[in-house]
Image (cartoon, rainbow, N blue to C red; front, side, top):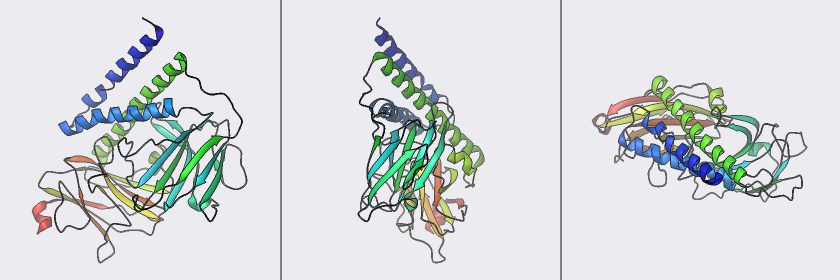
Length: 359
C-alpha cells in the first residue's frame, strides 16, 4: 500500500470514529441525532475550506466559517462572517468597501479549537474605530507592530482574522466587499505535496473533533445550570471562544412539550443592536432560511411598556406577537445578544401551556 493510500485510510478511519461523539451523548432524540451526524459533515466542509482551500498565509483569502448551511457555536442569523488564515509574524492589508451593514467588526484570533476549544482575541476593531472614505472605501493594516491610521493589532500567535457584519435586514443591506493580502513580497505558492496534504487533513479532523466537543460541552453546561432559565454567565469564558468583546451573550437551555409555549420577556437597554435566536442541541442556529427562528431590534414589536415579549412555540400561532418556532425540536439553546449596551438585562423565561397563552 502506498504512503498516500495509508494516509487516506487513516483519515477515513478517524472520520468514522468521530461519529462516536454523536452516539455517546445522552438525552438526544432521533432528530437531534440525525442533526448530529449532519453537523459532523458540516464541520468537515468548513474544516476542509479552512485548511485546504484557504489555508495559505502567504496568499490569504476570505471564506466563511459559519453560514446558512454550515454553522458553529450559535452562529448569528443576522451575521455575515468572513475568515482568513494569517501568520502573526507578518503584516497584512485589508482593502475594499464597508458596504451597508449597520455593525462591522474585525478581530485577530489565536484559533485553538482543535487543541482546547478556545479562540483567543489578539486584537479587535469595529466600524466606529475606523476612518472610512465617504464612498465606503477602507484600508486597514493588520500587524503586530503599531501603525498610524486604521490598524488592527495581532500577536505572533495570531492565526485567524474574523470579520463580523451584522445586518438589520440581510436581504436589503449591502455586504462589505473586502480583500486581504500579505504585505511582504512572497512569489512562492504553497504547492501541494503528500506531506502538506497529510498535515491539512490531520488539521481538518482535529478541528472537527475539537469544535464538536467544545460546543457539546457548552450545551451540557447550559442543560445543568441554565435549564429553562437565562443566566448572565461568565462573559470572559464566551470571549475566550472567539466572541466579540462588544457583545454580551446570555444563554438558556430550553425544553418544551408539544402543547407548550415558552414566554421570554425582557427590558431592552440602549444599545447598538440586539437579537434573539434559537439553536439546536449542537448549537447550530435553526434554519432561518425558511422559518422564523430569530428576531432583532429592527423587526421585533415591543410592548406598550417598552419591554420585549417573545413567544416560542412548536408551530406558528395566529395572533401571537414575536412568535418564533422550534422547527420540530423539543430542546435546544436560546441566546440573547446585547451589542454595545452599558446594561445587560437578563430575560425572564416562563414555560406555559398553549391554552394559557391563546386565552
